[in-house]
Image (cartoon, rainbow over all chains, first blue to last red; front, side):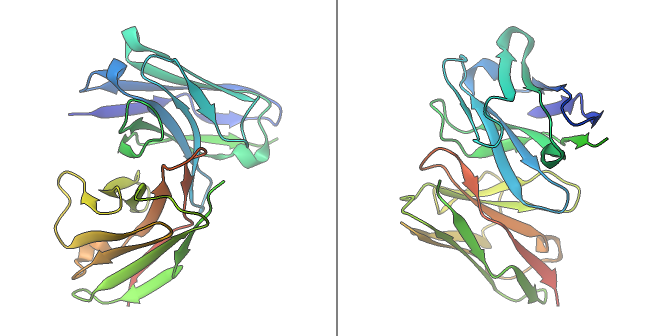
Length: 121
Length: 107
């Protein structure tokens, strides 16, 4: 059974930093693109970032470019999102999601339960 | 950036009725469009990929159609568990984008 479990969410002050993790199991992690998708409270879904299976390419939404860094450790079946210079508008539930392709431009076939990040003073 | 516009924002229907949801893209996405279902406090679930291909385990009452800029998700006969929010998503271009969602609520 495919499982994605996010951790690391919490309350952080504007301008602060936070690192999210996603632990994957039930599939060959190193064969899949992985993504972060977020959802602000009561709002719709927003794609944040994608990393290819071998970390060869990485994409970001303009809203987080230069502030967020996606990475992965295939040996540990883990995906990360390092978030810095956080703003109130980054407040959201952050989902880890498996991509359906190997070359990017994904759909998302499995999702974690989400980690809430709240940016507030 | 490709903007996806979903309509209506809210659809009020009774169980057993047919639901027709629309997603319009600001430019062609070919057939690279997916549909997701999200229930309160849950992660989204992939229903349809490439405009019309049902994901594994998705009931046949869900169907997708369209290409280019106009897409439709049809639920042929609403079951109680189908009342939820539905999102479309394109993978034709970066950045990947979602529509704003359609809430299907019980009338």
